[in-house]
Image (cartoon, rainbow, N blue to C red; front, top):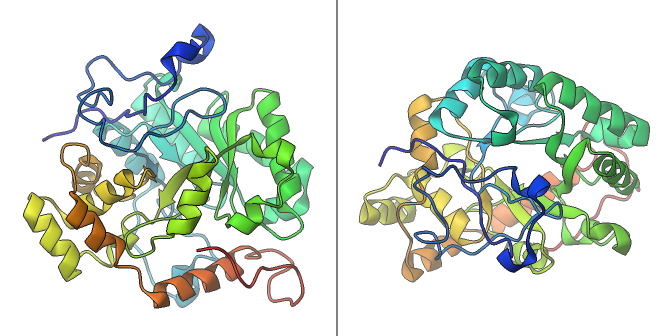
Length: 354
């Protein structure tokens, strides 16, 4: 099935609550969309409404390493040369393919190119869901730097507001103040919703209780090869939407025999199976690619369903080695690029909920 429009939103916003017209006018499913979640997608776990009462897209487009490779990216440090197309061209292609949720970040270093792609596309701002994240260096510098970065993202993206802005990593001793500043930006209308990224349960619990009601999402790595069941269920039980990055594991597991067998069973690609698994776990799916063909392939995940046996097999693909690597990556990530990097006794958590 050729996907012509993927502005897909969960519609589990309580109809009886009666949203104000000013909120309802944003992010509605186009009447022509083939993906009415009142009908064919009723089998998917529902996403809760965002604190703003807007709906959250089910599928997004990742812009990491699109047109720019950050110097502290693992591939850059290892000397691996990665080919990448310019962000302007890729983003316009993604929007033409039907994506409407763009996942951006200060760290990605390409929000100006993303903004150019949006302008080339030429559609209405109200039809987009634009998300960004403030990086560790900004988080460490404090509230003024967080605010300045939000304003910079708005300028580079050419947007009057962000639909979502997140704290990219829970930098020890700094992340709560950064989140508090994002809440102030929300209250001023610069951002519609605020959230977290790469937060463990233990990091979330450091946020004061009266501020937790503002937490809209937590973006973490989620895929069948890193299934953090306890973490996912913790956040979902608190009404926090879980966004998945590395949903496709960077393509490194596409030839996994168990995955291939399930893909062949459904007449689908292994990428589509991984994306569908993510959705059936109640997570937002954010694939990324610079190939126009794969853009369309990756988003075609709403026209089939994995059965219980499939899900059981995929749930069991996470190894203890993968969990260990994740814990190690977490300890690196929370201080990456900051003055805390490489230091002992700076508050990095040794044990986190998986």
